[in-house]
Amino acid sequence: MKHKLVYGVGVFDGVMESTSIVYDSWHHMIERCYCLSRLEKYPSYSDCTVDPEWHLYSNFKKWFEVNYVDGYHLDKDVLVQGNKIYSSERCVFIPHRINNLLTDRARDRGEYPLGVSKESRRNKYKACISVLGKNKHLGFYDTPEEAHEAWRMAKKKYVSECANESFSKGEISERVRNALLHRNF
Image (tube, rainbow, N blue to C red):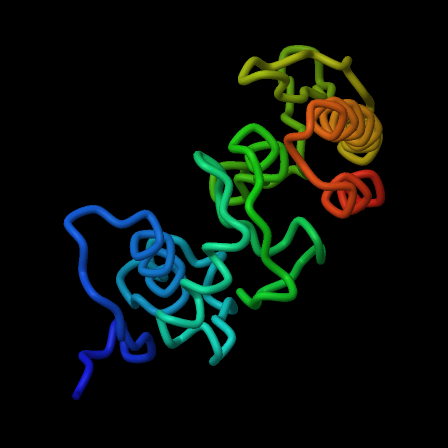
């Protein structure tokens, strides 16, 4: 039986159901890495790939059925910071809240480092961190580097608190918690 390729690499060898979380997760993963129009819009995925084992839907489905947690998101770089390969060894499902903690929004950031903006009226650099979707002001600094360091320290503390809380509630594994606690910002 000949299978149609999905974005030139994915092979769907399953049975299509009217709604399938497994298929949607697999399809979106392939799309993020290989859909040219999406890569133009989101260039941060331009170096990302999917392990050839997961090009075949049925292989991804086997892994998914063992690892999926309802409502969680597939993540490729929480366990291995900076990872660009979707694979069974490097991916994990994590809560949306944890996934959002690690988004850098580089496209929207502008010329300054993470957590930093220029406050022209004061001729200072402002540091802010997002906590539960709201900006928390960290202070004004003379240089972007000082402001970024304030953001970095606050981010590390906040991520550690969230990781420990999520672990204590059984929402994430010890492996994910440890990766978050040792993450560089």
